[in-house]
Image 1 (cartoon, one colour):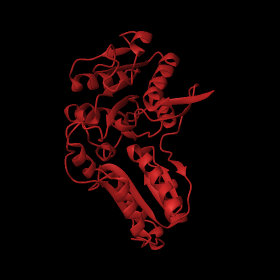
Image 2 (tube, rainbow, N blue to C red):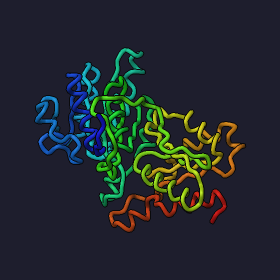
Image 3 (cartoon, rainbow, N blue to C red):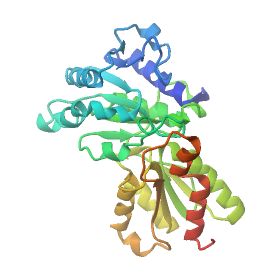
Image 4 (spheres, one colour):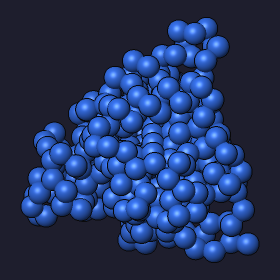
Length: 329
């Protein structure tokens, strides 16, 4: 059976079903219990599974993330919630120097099957310290997998896969999309990590995106088709580490044009890695237009709505970028 769920509810269902199927899975974080999560994702799970498996923690991210790493090493499967990804700055050592390194340093004898869930992104007026998109930072840590769903269907399947995985995973959730709905099966299912999804097939240009920019890019593709007869292919990466390079290259080989769109700051953003991987193949000689990257301006995210909007990629600016690639401006 399939019905529509929001991303928020799809994530909750994924955790509930995995906790029912595997008693080693537990949740921990600030306000994930009685308060039901600052983003209301954990909901009433504390009443279903009790405080021993849905643990409200002290306001010490270093303490509870370190506890999660240790418990994962001993065979449990913690799902840790950071209220916002920005808070990784106060608890980076357990992730960077412990979770990411232990499998390597132990000669593959010790795994860390831990999921670190964190909301990210702007658009809600949360200002500079609660609005960052830090995926490129996480992707630069060997030993960490980085997952970013943009639909409810993907959110459930990817989170189940992440919980069952034997490595530490940073699972980034776009805050602006928590209420977005799509059809989600009731039964548990998995989506392979490291596999992108072709959200729209096209022949004229490849739009490569992920996270909060996916709905914008899909809307943009409809406008381009209707008004300019430009057929866009839209790829949702879903996983950044591991990265599905094959899907990217196959798409670019077909369309011969590519634009990479993300909410994160454009300078040194993850789009640069994608552009580099394309440019290091013979496809670089077949492109009809230079690779384009679109991201946020290099500035902290402002609080004021009009300033926040001017910082982030917008539909109008994306349209102008693509039209320029077809020399239609």
